[in-house]
Amino acid sequence: MNYNDPNQKHMALPWWRKALLLLTGPASLSYPWIPIRQLAPRHRSKILAHLCKLNPHDRYLRFGYAATDAQIESYVGSLHFLRDEIHGVFNRRLELVAMAHLAFSMDPDWSSCAEFGVSVLSQCRGKGLGAKLFSHAVVHARNEGVDMLFIHALSENSAMLRIVKSAGAIVARDGSETEAFLRLPAANVDSQVTQIVNEHMSEMDYQLKAKAKQFREILAVLQEIRQGVRRARHHSQQ
Picture 1 (spheres, rainbow, N blue to C red):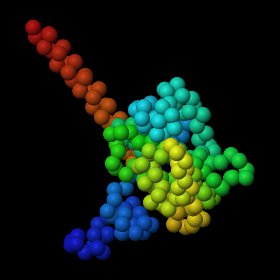
Picture 2 (picture 1 turned 90 degrees about the horizontal axis):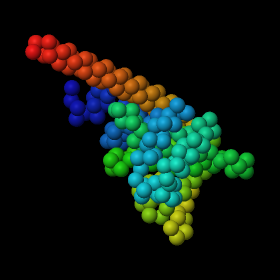
Picture 3 (picture 1 turned 135 degrees about the vertical axis):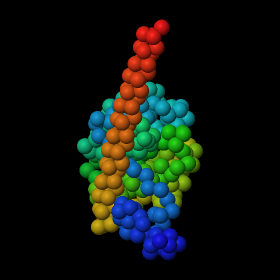
Picture 4 (picture 1 turned 180 degrees about the vertical axis):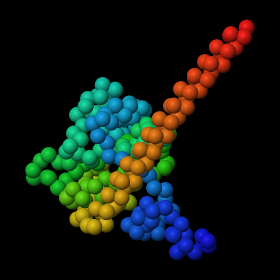
């Protein structure tokens, strides 16, 4: 097979990459797909662990102040999973390394608006997770009928501001704080299919990671048993 031939190269892709290629075009071949999974109430402990791992400066950028562990715990306890959409990226150990909160407006006069917030652990920076989570949130917001996405960030949060500016947001800076507004197009077949494909693939990825983690834990237990047997044999032979 000639992999320099674009047509043959596409034929060699797994089914999920072909699906993304149809939705996002050839550019999707140049960037790795990142599994982003919707979070539920059962993930509160993982969300809390993730946010508590943020250093003081990162907490300041995420919340607008250097939130304490107690304040973070209060925030996590107040998360409304039925009203809002909360998504995250897990590593192979099922640790939450990045998450985004898409909060829908509770004001009837602003029902078509939502606010976006994101956090990424320092060791996972530079992988485009923030940008991927933002793009993911945009798709979900469109499919929920949102036509205005609001982002409140500190002016020094250059990474977040780069993301929203590249998306075409209107940015207004007021001293140490910046507000950005992004008009969203109406949902269409592409946005709806993109969401369905991503959710299905992310769930598969999570289940595979869960099984791999379980398998590693079983191997660790077996290894401890073997070591115990060896030690017992060694003592019996003395």
